[in-house]
Image (cartoon, rainbow over all chains, first blue to last red; front, side):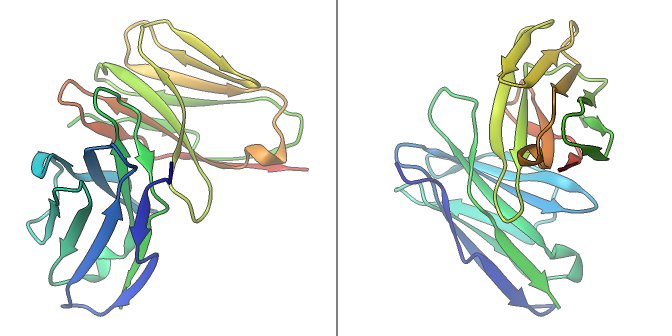
Length: 112
Length: 110
């Protein structure tokens, strides 16, 4: 089975712009979670989607949003980018009834 | 907010040495997971511990879950350069959300 894929792998944006990141989970996995990883804050949970519904949400401002499609692929959007949004954004999927999360390689976002 | 504190944050050792990484919290978790992350990649699950007092071994790695399910440790015996990476513990709460520790960056020098 192919692993979790994320596109793009690298992205450079300027302050005030918006960005959309994409995640394709492992086939058969219906749960997709997003995390932000920074050197200062570590890995922080953004949100989780299951069957196109947001099931859990972390403590991030409303500028961070996401959605999931019927094929379980997910996108996250960050509007009005700030310098502090520079981070590695990780997507993880997991199969039904299993706690193990399978992470993608991440999208590294740099905001200038 | 449930917090997981990992120590040490950084560890640089020589090949062949032993080491222990700690993951502590004041909260109880239904299970605790350990991940290893290499540069340019996402974290990869090493083990999940579920029962208080549980000990799991994965070759040279030994994982222990505290009796009260609030803390865990990872012990590596005879570390090798291939063990270099970022080790992350993550606790799963009743709401099925993972909370990650800050990570321990391990470097094993040949």
